[in-house]
Image 1 (tube, rainbow, N blue to C red):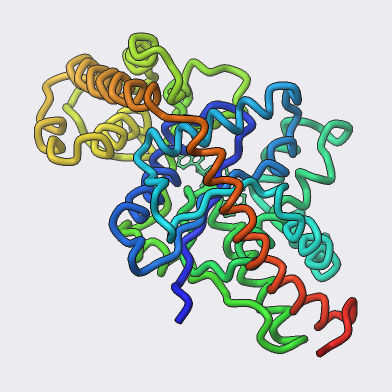
Image 2: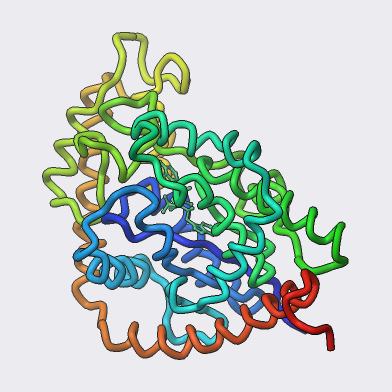
Length: 342
Ligand code: TYM
């Protein structure tokens, strides 16, 4: 019997930051290391999503390769036949299914997507693209083509996952069982052993999530950052003026809570030690040291990643996944009348 699929995509429009790492890459790598005998693992680069906001296009090829290397440096095993890596644009079924799904998606539901509202408010009407508007539909196609059941994503993508369930349910209702629906958010969290979706905050402005699209990278720790500079970013993190010790409260004390959260993700066993720290300064010094050590280790792993092995795996995985995706696409094309039913 076919294995259930765990799938996620991480855009290559920039270097990855620790939010991407903890929100999506690490859960995926953990699954790949521990559950690949029971599940199929798809970790892909949604390259068509890369320029939903403006990028430097001549850097995209290098960035894609770099991010694939980050996957491997994070521990993704390449020599496992249940783990697939691929670039979205190499599998045309993603674009074709998107167009079909677009025609069953209404303007109102895309306009309500929080991420679209936030980004378009920043960019203004003349710069916001139709691509940014309908990218949740492309994301739905990415998931539905492979019948993915579990999709590890950060908190900011939960709404898009819900939309994926909606559009799949809508087509199933009209045409019969075409798609397998991904599990709802609560079940996803349960599967990945969390109580909610993860949202790492910007260090300089902890009211916002850490994001690669920020104009300033003062509050963003990239995986490629120089470890000392990253430690410096932690030391300069915005906190608050309470003086009654380390207390967790994402509303009133978001900066310090965010730092504790980052430390917990890197060194879960030291939570009690961190909470007992006497001052914010001591806590920052400890978190800065832990982040520095993490990046030093990560960069060491990155140095030994071999491009050739990745390229060989990409080629064979893209062939295999094209085949899978085409089977789903044909079912949909037949259902909507684009291909004869056999
Ligand atoms: P992207 O590339 O913006 O982000 C990649 C992943 O990182 C998570 N993430 C965060 N998690 C915690 N804290 C943060 N501050 C933080 N910032 C980002 C994101 O939630 C995401 O899981 N549309 C997706 C990519 C995508 C995709 C898919 C994901 C395309 N197709 C299909 C899953 C399935 C995106 O833009 O992620």
